[in-house]
Image (cartoon, rainbow, N blue to C red; front, side, top):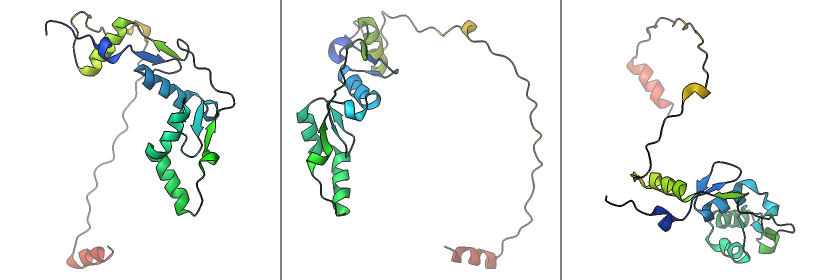
Length: 173
Protein backbone atom coordinates (compact mmCIF):
# COMPACT_ATOMS: atom_id res chain seq x y z
CA UNK A 1 0.00 0.00 0.00
CA UNK A 2 1.70 3.20 -1.19
CA UNK A 3 -0.49 5.63 0.65
CA UNK A 4 -2.18 5.37 4.03
CA UNK A 5 -5.98 5.63 3.79
CA UNK A 6 -7.54 8.74 5.31
CA UNK A 7 -9.84 6.99 7.76
CA UNK A 8 -10.73 10.20 9.58
CA UNK A 9 -12.20 11.52 6.36
CA UNK A 10 -14.43 8.45 5.97
CA UNK A 11 -15.23 7.66 9.63
CA UNK A 12 -14.96 11.11 11.21
CA UNK A 13 -13.04 12.14 14.28
CA UNK A 14 -12.88 9.81 17.26
CA UNK A 15 -14.82 10.88 20.36
CA UNK A 16 -14.42 9.62 23.92
CA UNK A 17 -17.05 9.66 26.65
CA UNK A 18 -16.19 12.19 29.36
CA UNK A 19 -17.16 9.80 32.15
CA UNK A 20 -15.82 6.43 31.03
CA UNK A 21 -13.42 5.00 28.41
CA UNK A 22 -16.12 4.39 25.74
CA UNK A 23 -14.92 5.56 22.29
CA UNK A 24 -16.43 5.78 18.85
CA UNK A 25 -18.14 8.02 16.32
CA UNK A 26 -19.76 11.17 17.70
CA UNK A 27 -23.36 9.96 17.40
CA UNK A 28 -22.55 6.65 19.08
CA UNK A 29 -20.74 8.34 21.97
CA UNK A 30 -23.62 10.81 22.46
CA UNK A 31 -26.13 7.94 22.51
CA UNK A 32 -23.91 6.03 24.95
CA UNK A 33 -23.68 9.10 27.20
CA UNK A 34 -27.45 9.54 27.34
CA UNK A 35 -28.09 5.83 27.93
CA UNK A 36 -25.50 5.18 30.64
CA UNK A 37 -24.78 8.52 32.31
CA UNK A 38 -28.00 10.57 32.25
CA UNK A 39 -30.99 9.62 34.42
CA UNK A 40 -34.05 8.67 32.38
CA UNK A 41 -36.15 11.63 33.51
CA UNK A 42 -33.39 14.10 32.49
CA UNK A 43 -33.26 12.96 28.85
CA UNK A 44 -35.06 15.29 26.43
CA UNK A 45 -37.59 12.62 25.44
CA UNK A 46 -38.02 9.15 26.93
CA UNK A 47 -40.29 6.12 27.16
CA UNK A 48 -40.95 4.66 30.60
CA UNK A 49 -42.16 1.37 29.11
CA UNK A 50 -38.90 0.33 27.43
CA UNK A 51 -36.44 2.95 28.83
CA UNK A 52 -35.79 4.39 25.37
CA UNK A 53 -34.07 7.82 25.40
CA UNK A 54 -33.66 10.32 22.58
CA UNK A 55 -33.29 14.01 21.78
CA UNK A 56 -36.21 14.54 19.38
CA UNK A 57 -39.95 13.99 19.52
CA UNK A 58 -39.83 12.39 16.07
CA UNK A 59 -37.39 9.70 17.29
CA UNK A 60 -39.57 9.07 20.34
CA UNK A 61 -42.70 8.56 18.23
CA UNK A 62 -40.96 6.42 15.61
CA UNK A 63 -39.43 4.08 18.20
CA UNK A 64 -42.93 2.78 19.05
CA UNK A 65 -43.03 0.98 15.69
CA UNK A 66 -39.41 0.02 15.07
CA UNK A 67 -37.78 -0.52 18.47
CA UNK A 68 -38.03 -4.25 19.19
CA UNK A 69 -37.91 -3.91 22.98
CA UNK A 70 -40.84 -1.47 22.95
CA UNK A 71 -42.93 -3.66 20.63
CA UNK A 72 -42.34 -6.69 22.90
CA UNK A 73 -43.32 -4.72 26.01
CA UNK A 74 -46.57 -3.59 24.35
CA UNK A 75 -47.34 -7.20 23.38
CA UNK A 76 -46.69 -8.31 26.97
CA UNK A 77 -49.09 -5.65 28.27
CA UNK A 78 -51.78 -6.76 25.83
CA UNK A 79 -51.29 -10.45 26.74
CA UNK A 80 -51.84 -9.54 30.39
CA UNK A 81 -55.10 -7.79 29.50
CA UNK A 82 -53.81 -4.24 30.04
CA UNK A 83 -54.40 -1.45 27.55
CA UNK A 84 -51.52 0.46 26.03
CA UNK A 85 -51.86 4.23 25.86
CA UNK A 86 -48.84 6.12 24.51
CA UNK A 87 -49.55 9.17 26.67
CA UNK A 88 -48.88 7.09 29.78
CA UNK A 89 -45.39 6.08 28.64
CA UNK A 90 -43.98 8.66 26.20
CA UNK A 91 -42.63 11.63 28.15
CA UNK A 92 -40.81 14.92 27.67
CA UNK A 93 -38.36 16.01 30.37
CA UNK A 94 -39.36 18.95 32.51
CA UNK A 95 -35.66 19.66 33.19
CA UNK A 96 -33.57 18.42 30.29
CA UNK A 97 -29.90 17.56 30.59
CA UNK A 98 -27.67 20.25 29.10
CA UNK A 99 -25.22 18.34 26.94
CA UNK A 100 -21.83 19.97 26.43
CA UNK A 101 -19.14 19.05 23.91
CA UNK A 102 -15.69 18.95 25.49
CA UNK A 103 -17.10 18.03 28.89
CA UNK A 104 -19.49 15.16 28.27
CA UNK A 105 -17.76 13.90 25.14
CA UNK A 106 -14.23 14.79 24.07
CA UNK A 107 -13.07 15.09 20.45
CA UNK A 108 -9.71 13.40 19.85
CA UNK A 109 -6.92 14.69 17.62
CA UNK A 110 -6.62 13.82 13.95
CA UNK A 111 -3.63 11.53 14.62
CA UNK A 112 -5.38 9.75 17.51
CA UNK A 113 -8.52 9.30 15.41
CA UNK A 114 -6.54 7.95 12.45
CA UNK A 115 -4.69 5.48 14.68
CA UNK A 116 -7.91 4.25 16.33
CA UNK A 117 -9.82 3.74 13.06
CA UNK A 118 -6.81 1.99 11.52
CA UNK A 119 -6.61 -0.44 14.43
CA UNK A 120 -10.33 -1.18 14.10
CA UNK A 121 -9.95 -1.81 10.36
CA UNK A 122 -6.87 -4.00 10.82
CA UNK A 123 -4.67 -1.60 8.87
CA UNK A 124 -1.13 -0.84 9.91
CA UNK A 125 -0.29 2.77 9.21
CA UNK A 126 3.33 3.36 8.31
CA UNK A 127 3.56 6.88 9.68
CA UNK A 128 2.81 5.78 13.25
CA UNK A 129 5.53 4.17 15.37
CA UNK A 130 4.99 0.68 16.73
CA UNK A 131 3.32 0.72 20.14
CA UNK A 132 5.73 0.36 23.02
CA UNK A 133 5.17 -1.79 26.05
CA UNK A 134 4.53 0.15 29.27
CA UNK A 135 7.50 0.30 31.57
CA UNK A 136 7.23 -1.84 34.65
CA UNK A 137 8.89 0.76 36.86
CA UNK A 138 5.44 2.19 37.65
CA UNK A 139 4.24 -1.11 39.00
CA UNK A 140 5.89 -2.77 41.95
CA UNK A 141 5.29 -6.41 42.53
CA UNK A 142 6.04 -8.22 45.75
CA UNK A 143 6.80 -11.90 45.54
CA UNK A 144 4.68 -14.06 47.81
CA UNK A 145 5.76 -17.62 48.40
CA UNK A 146 2.82 -19.94 48.49
CA UNK A 147 3.38 -23.62 49.11
CA UNK A 148 1.11 -25.74 46.96
CA UNK A 149 -1.48 -27.83 48.79
CA UNK A 150 -0.88 -31.55 48.59
CA UNK A 151 -3.42 -33.24 46.39
CA UNK A 152 -5.46 -36.19 47.62
CA UNK A 153 -4.53 -39.49 45.98
CA UNK A 154 -6.80 -40.60 43.20
CA UNK A 155 -9.52 -42.92 44.34
CA UNK A 156 -10.72 -45.74 42.17
CA UNK A 157 -14.35 -46.62 41.95
CA UNK A 158 -15.31 -50.12 42.99
CA UNK A 159 -18.88 -49.85 41.72
CA UNK A 160 -19.80 -52.22 38.95
CA UNK A 161 -22.41 -51.66 36.29
CA UNK A 162 -24.93 -54.34 35.62
CA UNK A 163 -27.71 -54.51 33.08
CA UNK A 164 -30.27 -54.17 35.89
CA UNK A 165 -28.66 -50.99 37.24
CA UNK A 166 -28.53 -49.46 33.76
CA UNK A 167 -32.23 -50.30 33.15
CA UNK A 168 -33.27 -48.67 36.43
CA UNK A 169 -31.20 -45.59 35.55
CA UNK A 170 -32.73 -45.17 32.07
CA UNK A 171 -36.27 -45.51 33.45
CA UNK A 172 -35.70 -42.30 35.41
CA UNK A 173 -35.71 -40.32 32.19
